[in-house]
Image 1 (cartoon, rainbow, N blue to C red):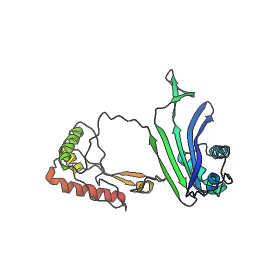
Image 2: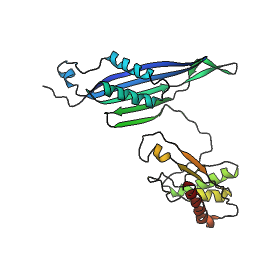
Image 3: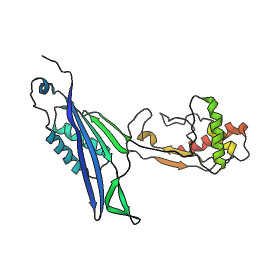
Image 4: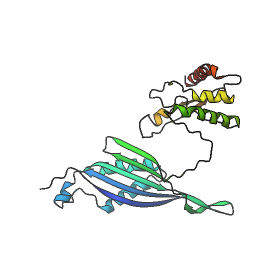
Length: 273
């Protein structure tokens, strides 16, 4: 008698197109949903006993019923709701996994006016979400696939672990600052696990001194609750940005670097207090 250690099955492509109507303005929501289950379904494969297996039509109907109650929900919320409903109504399922892809649509433009009821695919990128749950623990990941980007300027690459590349990067950034550009710099170089400020890297301060450009301290609070260091999961959170007074660098030289770092750090600690 063959022994099956684990089994899974489901539906790989459930296409769902819903149109939210708000008067003359329509908003399409175009989703492709895949649902997979794991559980003790070995008898279906060894004995032909389909007890406990969900027919394809049952899966489709369940997904559509949940979606009708989640018309305006983000795809992450929809995935969580589908997992919860499956596990609640079908105890034979040990693990439910839901993958959702969203096709964006853009309004057609006619005579300089966006049309309320005519659309065209909005690029090749897709929003994605994957939710898996066993009823007590949930894993969620989300992102974009097929995202196409082009950079034409304004970013100064820095190679970590290559000290020889650091000085040319600082010089390039300082030249851009002199031309009136602004830069966002995270002086710690990484995220704190505790919320306490980490030691500041020196490159950004040398760049500001070279360009004689002021530094505006910015404190960010709440981001650690949204996405913890080392975790791919994103949670709802309130993120607050607090701006401090600009700190001038006019007249400073590289010899004043540590003094400047201390002033900026003190300002940021006050903003975080």
